[in-house]
Image (cartoon, rainbow, N blue to C red; front, top):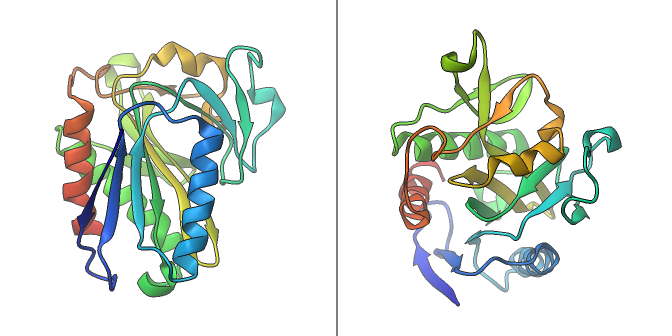
Amino acid sequence: MVKAEALAAPLSATPVEWRVSDAPVPYDIAVAEMEARAAAIAAGDAPELVWLLEHPALYTAGTSSDEKDLLTPDRFPVFRTGRGGQYTYHGPGQRVAYVMLDLKKRGPDVRAYVRDLERWLIATLACFNVIGEVRDDRVGVWVRRPDKGIGREDKIAAIGVRIRKWVTFHGISINVEPDLDHFSGIVPCGISQHGVTSLANLGHVVSMEEVDMALKKTFTDIF
């Protein structure tokens, strides 16, 4: 079942559509739908879209991925993808937001768009009293873990984007309550010095619906 609703975006002539998929969406199907929708947005035939979903357990390899970072290649399906970045994991308990926006209307600045995604994630985490931070030398959003040692930080949210004809696709993911052991089959985003965490792992037991509400609320403030 798929639910859809409209949410006004201040810089868009038409409302941004929000879609929520209740069942896990196979990765190849999601990519095909994203590419079709991005093309339609670029042609002026469809409104912008934010698609909230989960995937079955899988690994994706971005354009900068290194084969040595795939530690257990037979554990889950591996998908080569056109988004930026390295290896990442998607699976149940992780909220993925695929964001299809027209940067021709919003400002053709890729760095500014990525910064806005970071701000969106940080604002969403703040709704659950989690302090998310970004680092110049690491992609994604991180939380400090002094309980695990001096200087230890864990990644709680990831960013991977692709832009075609100034329309964005792929997007962000937040670890709500995934099986964190599934990340052990890769070196997430090529970073081995730090770990991975989730809202549940930090002691914040929230539903996916609550996360979706926070994402929608903070979206309007950022975009």
